[in-house]
Structure formats: structure tokens, C-alpha cells
Image (cartoon, rainbow, N blue to C red; front, side, top):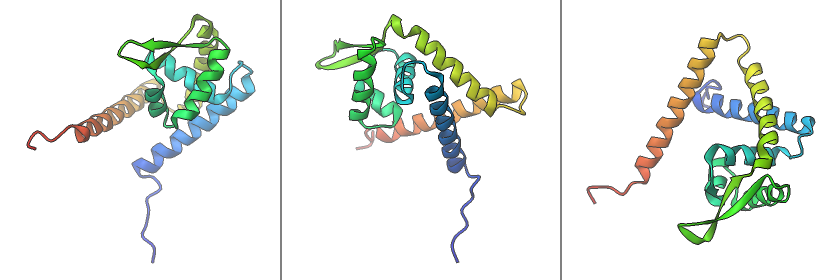
Length: 157
């Protein structure tokens, strides 16, 4: 007899939510005609969120391979929406940052994201939605802290 798996467990709910949000966002970007693909839109939003950062860090944040991010950045750079700058801490590395030309595209991305939030928050009061977002931030921060603590060298060693 197979073991029961709770489809409403934390991991399944978060995974389902992320998958559905991404699918909705990708569809909205594709239909909106804002001049970027869904992958480019996600990349641009992450660069805008994080400020100048290395491509490898960006790939980690996005959960994709570095080569995937390189392709997105190449296309965004050709559209003058991002630029690569030398990393002052490592002359071999490049930092990526948004340009002024990205302002309108980022505004459109924000509006599309807000549309997804409206759909997701249907049936919730403003306070319930705010509490839900707060709870997600706490869970995310707890996992980030746990991950950082696991990667620290053991002080007893």
C-alpha cells in the first residue's frame, strides 16, 4: 500500500503556487507585446530588484543555469535594456545592471505582475493579503538563514 502524500503540504503548495504564478506571468508577457520574452522579462525584473550583480549570482537567484542567463542578458543588452560593467572586485567578472531604457519595460512588467496578484488575492481582504505576503517573507527569510547557517564552517572544528 503506497504511503499517503499530503497534496496540501508546504512544499507542494509553494511549488504549485510558483508554477501557476510563473505560467500566468509568462502568458501575460507573451500576450502583452512589451518587446521582451517571458525569460527576458524575468531576468530584467531580477536585475532591477537586485541592482548590479554578477551573472552567476543572477542565475542562482533565478534557479537557472548560467548559460541560460547569459542568453537572456545578451538579448537584453542588444535591446539596450541592460549593460555589463566590470566588477571592481574581480576583473574577470562582469556586473549586470538595468539601463534607463528599461524603465518603460519594467513598468509594464510591474503592471503584469500586479494583475497576477489581483487574481491570486481574489476573495482575500487587504489585511489577509498583506498577512499572507508577510508570512511568505518570513518563511523565505527563515530558509535563507538556515541555508546560510548550514554553509558556515563549524566553529568547533
